[in-house]
Image (cartoon, rainbow, N blue to C red; front, side, top):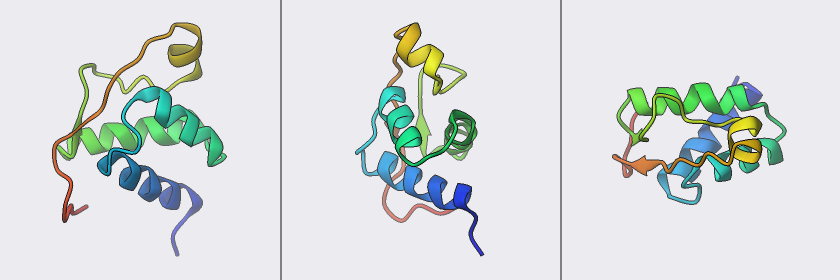
Length: 87
């Protein structure tokens, strides 16, 4: 059985790879709309980068309220692989 976090992460992956969500602000909004905490998105974005599905110009995906809202730090996510991606 798939957990709520795994279901969220699959939705997040789909929206990033289809370029519906292109930056940390988009992902933060989506994360909160789905009722999840930043950590769930943060860890999964790092995993997607490690799997070379996406890339971003920072060691951190910057998916936190502090980075996006308070510090106005924005980072764009670029898709490296899209169609027929594998886990």
